[in-house]
Structure formats: structure tokens, C-alpha cells
Length: 357
Ligand SMILES: Cc1cc2nc3c(=O)[nH]c(=O)nc-3n(C[C@H](O)[C@H](O)[C@H](O)COP(=O)(O)O)c2cc1C
Image 1: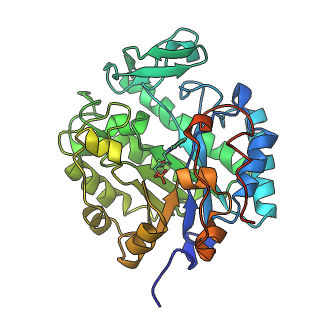
Image 2: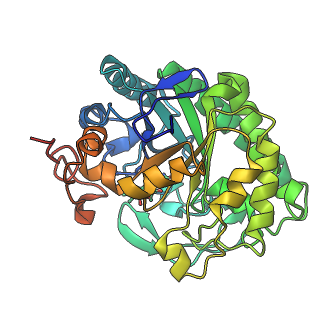
């Protein structure tokens, strides 16, 4: 029988009852960077998803770049997340934490006036979202070579904290122009040390982070999100296809839970993205592949049926439809997401989207 969105799949030791994944979604509703009761309600509402991937969660204060995003570096944050993972498990759900370091996509206001860090001192176009509103990005400070082990340690410690917080696994955020993606691409990585230049060197930090996180969790509960065709956050690369095919080849050796690919979005294509065919990425990777980016039920069934992906993550549809699994099953109409309430605010546009009647 063919695989479908509603058919089960094993991801490492986790048994997923369906292949409808909740994509990581920053919602900026964690005052003081601590997970809240309201966040618990939001995730519990979505527990029928095959797998919930949390919103991006900073691994350290250095890794922060948006207001009211949760962290996983202090005891209050671990305790807050533990309440959420317990509640999701009580509803028979599964939940992975997305681990995040924003690198240059930040602002001195998040760092007591110090500069954000990056592979190279290259300012992104655009503006940072700061507690006092939008402010132009600054030129970040290039990390010294002897600071890199400290970055790997931030991930290792955050992985330990995620374990203590009761998650089922962790997703390393290496997509969408944040720190690890900044290292992968030659538009943002102009380093001349062991972490810049060749494909091998640009992949080195991500592979070291993967090793460290897998040491804590076992590789079968660790996964990585990549956006090979992405241009978000002013990203560019002279030859992304070669980079990501090489990288996926390297990731094959770990036996990860899955790799999560953000497909080219309309915006990327408009911004001249060098779009990489999913079939090329699929051929390069031996394990479970999740895809995301502009999928509806029909396209998602098709990508699974063709064997191009094993499961599909939904972003905006999950914002607006807590019972997306049940709606897909019933071919029921979907609620429309309201972009005005995506970031920040209260339960409006967060936990008040109606379930099916
Ligand atoms: C409000 C919002 C917040 C997002 N936050 C994150 C995030 O924290 N981490 C991440 O990797 N992607 C994030 N994304 C990207 C989504 O995970 C997803 O890749 C994107 O929305 C495309 O999928 P869709 O067309 O199904 O929405 C966000 C997208 C939206 C709309």
C-alpha cells in the first residue's frame, strides 16, 4: 500500500501515527524568554500532529535576536518547557525542540550593547526586530577561531537542558539565514581559518554541533533543518546545490531522526533564489526526509506518493488549524491564518482558532 499523510512512520525510536508535522513557528509570546501556560495550551491543541516541532528556541543569550522568544539556557525555561512536554505527552503527542542561535540576525540591544556574532563581519540588509521596534541591522563581529568550541558547547548544554525538559528529540536549526546557515554559505562566510573556504570547512561547525548534540541525545533523536534554496535574512551562495549535496552526504553517516528541508518559497524565487530540485536533495540523503514550504493537502500527498519526502511539515496551516490532522482526514474546510497576529500578542490568533464543529 502507498504511504499517505495519514499513514504512520517511525522516526528513530518515535512512532508517529501520521506524517502531518507541525513546522517550527516563532510566535513571540514568551515574556522574559520563559515558556508560559498559554504556550502550553497552544501546543496541547496541536498534539494530534505526527510530530510537533517547537518554535525556534535560543540556546544562549548570545543566540537571541527577537523579543519574547523562549530560551533553553536557564532553569526557569527548562521548568516551563517541562510543563509543556508533559502536557503534550498526556495527550499522546510527540514534541521536538528547535535549537536556535541567530548569529548576525540580532542587535546590540539584545546583548547589553555588544555586537552580534557571525562567521564574518558582514551586515545583513534589513532590520532587526528589537524590543523598541525595528532597527537597522548592524555589522556583526566575526567569531574568533578560539571562540568556536564555545559555540559548540552552547549547543551541547542546550541539548542537555532539552533532555531535562522532557522533549522527545531536538531539531538543530541550520536554516533561514541564522548562525549555522551563515557558516554554510559563501555569501556570509568569508573566513580563512578551518571554518571557511572549502565545502568541508564551511560544513565543519554544523557537523561539530551535530556530533555534540548526538553525544547527548543519540543521533536517532536528533535532526537538522536546512533551507538549501533560501534567501531569507539576506542569504546568498555562489553554488548552493553543490554545498547541500555535499552536506547531505556528510549527514548520512550519523543515522539522524530526519533531515527537514524548507523548499523554495515564493519569496525566495522572487529574490532570485537558485532553486534546488527536491529530487536532487532526496537522492543525496539516505534517511527520513521531511519537507516544508507552501504545501496543502494535495501537494503534500503527491510529494509523499512520489517518494520525494517521507512526511510534510505545515506552518501557516498549523497556525490556523489546531486539528489539521482531523480536518485533512475529513477533507473539511480550513481556517484562514491571520498574519496580523502571527508575532506577539495574546490568545487572539494563537489559541482561539476554532476546532471543527
Ligand atoms: C509566523 C511564522 C514563524 C516562523 N518561525 C519559524 C521558526 O521559528 N523556525 C523555523 O525554522 N521556521 C520558521 N518559520 C518557517 C516555517 O516553519 C515554514 O518553513 C514556512 O512557514 C513555510 O511553510 P508553510 O508554507 O506551510 O507555512 C516561520 C514561519 C511563520 C509564518
